[in-house]
Image: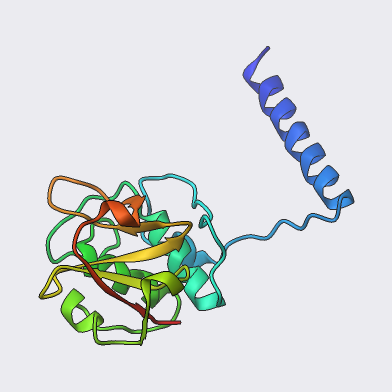
Length: 170
């Protein structure tokens, strides 16, 4: 099959799938432009494993997830490299919310929330004194910029040692 035929076939298949979903009452929506701000290694924006309780928290989650694969660089705040608090600052900025720059300052911002009551978009903090932050994305998972030599990634919350608290921002 020629490249042109393959392109037409894919386009027709996508069109048929969209039509089928519309017939079934499934609406497709696009993410806000801010959800893909700053790149993510060219990867498509992934949906959070669980829906956030507010639109602003969902934008922050989607934005943080879109950065997976970007390198950790100490002091970086995006759009193509991040440290832990730079990632959370960047994600909430995309949602129109300004939060403090450092993990220690972020640990005193927002509303305290227990580990059992975590919702997507909540910031999770580690170590005493606080020296690391990630964002809870639901289903026991978080997204974070871990350490030099690594990239922004998702992990199981309980695989990260030293949990000391969480804060709800939106």
